Amino acid sequence: MGKMTISSSNQLSSIVNETFSLSKVILGFANQKKILDRLGYAFDIYFLVFIKFMGIRFAIPLIYSSLGIAVFIITIFTGRKFGVPLSEITALIYILYKVVISISRITTGKSQLDNFFPSYEQLQDLRYNADKLKQKTGSKIFTGIKEKIDIENLCYSYPTNEPTLTDINITIPCGKMIAIVGESGSGKSTLIDLLMGFDEPSTGYIKIDDTTLQEFDITSYRKRIGYVPQDSMLFNMTIRENLLWANEYATEDEIKQACKQANAEEFIREFLEGYNTLVGDRGVRLSGGQIQRISLARAILKKPDILILDEATSALDSASEKLIQEAIEDIARKTTVIIIAHRLSSIVNADYIYVLKKGQIVEKGTYRDLTQKKGEFDRMVQLQSL
Image (cartoon, rainbow, N blue to C red):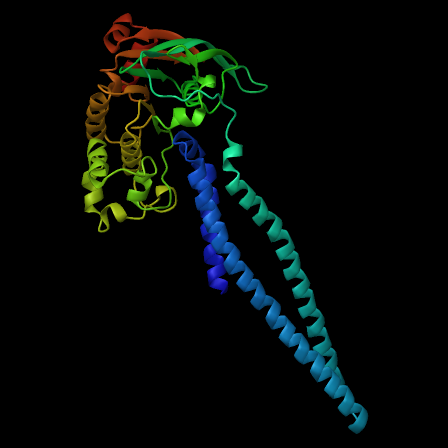
């Protein structure tokens, strides 16, 4: 029973840790309800095992205590009638001591239960009221992009900090591939967070076909976005289950096609269990490149209207990156693609590139235009070619 308690506790802890570490993936795929159900199921298992374990913990001390008291009474009665040696009196004192310790353990166990029940009730309340926990959003249902995404006069500052983004103006035409580049700390990932609706601009707007992002129901918006975050991580599930996180109704053929596009099918087939291979906590059993390819396949499987990639190929070797680059360019013919790129060679064919520096757009244009200007972008290209 002790092993079962530890096992169920470890499982619950693992899911809780995943919930926090993969929060952007959960929100990005609009799967809050699914993770709450998974968390609640693990908590239910732990609760049942815990109650059984505590029942045994209560029963054993009670039995020992009852035996101790019985022995004490019998010995006192026998001692009064026949006389009791000093050694036996000492033994009686020891028994009484054990009785007190046992009662103390029972009290401790009750205290643990008293602490446990409020937590359990809070979790159940969280599970069954998940809809009430939604981020404050508008009511308009997002049905896709018809013309463009406009980022207008956008500024963003973290509390008590200097502005992270200042006067950002970007136009993303429907069906085009747009790249955003810049050195570390330039505000690229913050801009992606705003596009995902994880936060709101301090001033300015993000508009989709003249409707601000705040006017849309955020869940309906995210359900039509494919998202690969900067730190790609997987759930402690099988490869198939991780892929179905994006689209639970996907067929086997659709799963394999998405993995083929993401250059993941070949290494998945090499695993003994194939798509049923457990990836471990945060995908620990896979390499960084394998995790990124599965994460990309998961986003592709969603068949999104908008595909957002935040340095999604940073852990890949050059050969794998080239294959995925070709896949992304193919997807971009049917989907609006927004890329945060570290390796500038991966965005040669982007329709438009925006260069960020210290939270401001300092250059914009095609790859060819920007390299010919001999400005900030060309400087970055030259540094990477060394």
